[in-house]
Image 1 (tube, rainbow over the protein chains, first blue to last red):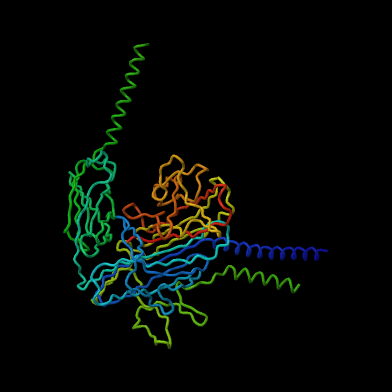
Image 2 (tube, rainbow over the protein chains, first blue to last red):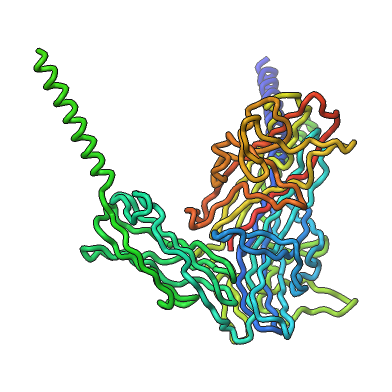
Length: 321
Length: 251
């Protein structure tokens, strides 16, 4: 009798194990099916800067990864761009670049369709070959990979397509040292407190507005700093971000760091100095701003008014009593 | 009894196989006949090939970030000078398709959302732009127009942001919420049209640059809420189009 019971228990246990395994597998597969509803791509490098002589060629490896859980079909293209604004964003153009760009991969050409399986990386070797006699100037393009939408079996709705790109800044120069020229369009304080007067609150960190225009024939990066010097000998150095300023465009240039003081007081003589790609002081501009404890003074005024009002009210009440 | 043991063994093997994810090489080249786990050869001396005879799949080229200067007539810099990272620029969409199902008439609840995730990695800043290939179009070539503003709201959706709270305002539009979305959407209370290709340029739906306070390497998430409202005179049919997202780092 006991043997029968034991056998029955073992049977139940085995049955439970089988149920557990199948449940686990079902859930595992079901999760994968749900996650397959997303699309995820990555590309490296995000930016390529090249300076080369006419007649030369270079290669650069790009890595495109399908981080999603479904295989994706892609195609690629090289699209010229121009600056869209002063922040470094781009606007892709409909025009075409000369056929200097190609893939060195044995089994993949530029513009050719290819399949990238889930989780896999496609390495492409981009070759840029600039012919002899090419005009010495800058060329801007984006290497663009785009998914090819699959079949949509739903009802009314939208299929999505993703494009991911990486920008290429190409300077063609025989000497390797093209002429670089800039102009400081504006150097000012952004967060002024009292209309256009150069006054900020003592508890606020000044935000500088620096607009640099490229007036030369080749792109450059400003290399320099903003230095703010106070009355009492305080000195704050803010390094400029080495952002690319393209030909015939203006760019807002920020700083790598902020003034690391919690309280500023008095006048601050502020100077921006930079060179083009080299740490020089070829270009400079100067402003002075004043830091005053505006919020603190306002707080005191309000407190005095409230106290005066309360006292006056109490005085009236006492007289009435 | 033997059959039961077999079932158990089979189940256990399935479990083990399900749990044991293969450890794949980070990058590899493979086909049915070969696999190369180190496809990137940086010491190539010309690609071996013979026209019409064979073509060998060798990848050569610069892979590391940084600045390379040669006296050979060229300089290359891959990546941003001020970001010391080789984390790639990533972009994700979820879900892949927006399925509105059967549309109800004269309501503002025909909405579907899509989540955009960006990790700018080693990029200085980024932007995501959106564009539709055409109006939502049925097989019979009927269309659902881009939405207009509510009566009394003088906006132009093609260039501006407008309110959409009136059930008699018809068409298709979208709004954005989350990280790095244009402030004009007012936390999802204002709507816009999608730009139509090829005549209209794609419009920015998400993005930030260092000057605007962007910090490289931080994951950013935004949600697009797409809305369709149709009138009772809208022709029956299945309406579809293609929505393209373009994610590009700054320069």
